Length: 363
Image 1 (cartoon, rainbow, N blue to C red):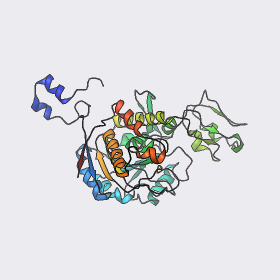
Image 2 (image 1 turned 30 degrees about the horizontal axis):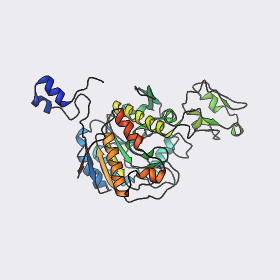
Image 3 (image 1 turned 45 degrees about the vertical axis):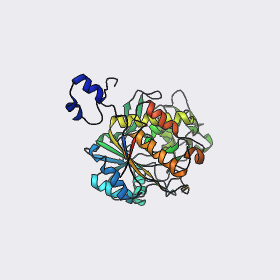
Image 4 (image 1 turned 180 degrees about the horizontal axis):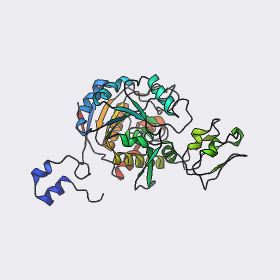
C-alpha cells in the first residue's frame, strides 16, 4: 500500500506524540528504519530461546514452525534438539512442503513425515502443507502475479521461520528468504521459481503407462512417443512427481542466478505479506551445499550462533555479515561457492521486504 506512514509523519498529522507512542514499531505496515536483530553466540537450544524471548511478543494465535527436516545422507540440517524446547513452548506444529526433485522420501506426505521422524523430529505434529492441494496468493511482482503454496497455510496465524543459514549452489546462501520461498512453495511453486523452460523428458524411459497424461492439468503430454506441448504446459511439475520411471526432470540451470534470487524474494514477500511471521537463523554446520543435497558436505567454518528478528532482510543481512566476519571474507559464499548471494538482500530491500540497516543486540 502506498499510504503507509512513519511515526514522525503520524505525529505531524495528528499532533499527538503520546498517541504515536502507543502504536507498535510498524506503523500502518512500514517497518522502522533500523530493526533489531538479536544474537546469541551459543548455537544451542538455550541460545534459541534467548533470542526468541526478544521477539516472542510478535507471535500470536496458532503457530507453525517452518523447518527443513533434512535429506537422507545429509547430516548438516538443524538438529531437532535445537528446536524442541521452542516448539514445546509454543505448542507449535512443524511444517514443510514436498520437493520438486526425485526423492525417495520427500515427494510424498507419508514418507516425508517418516523421514522427519527418522531424523528425530518426533516431538510435535508435522504438517506437509501442500499434501491436500495448493493455494494461490495474488502478488504484484516483477516476475509473478501469483505465488503458489500449500493449502494448509490457512491453518496457522503465525509462522516462525526456523532456518539453517548455509551455502547454496544457485543463490550463494540459503537463509530465511529461501526458507520462506522455496521452502513454502508447492511443487508448482518450486517449478515456477526454478525453471524458465518446460520439464525435460526422455522418451526412451517412457513405459507408456499414461500416468502423466491422466494427471496433466494442461493436457500438454502425449505418449507414443512421449512429448510435451510447450504451448499447453503450465509448469505445475505434476509429471515429475507422478512418473514411476523418472522420464521427466527439472530443467536445472535454465534460470539465471540473479533472476532465481529475485524469484525467491518475490515468493518470500508474498508469503510474509500474507501471514504474520518472525525469523530465526541458525548459523551452524555451515556447509557450501543446501540441506537438500543428498550428501553431507563437511562444514567449512566454525559455528557463528543464532540470530532472530521480525525483519527478514535485517536477519539475513546480519547473518551474512557475521559469517563474513567470522570467515574473514567480504563475500564468503562467493569464495566457497563461486556464487554471491548479495543480490538476494539487495533485491529484497528494493521491493520493500525489510531493511538492510539493523541494530545488532547481543543476548
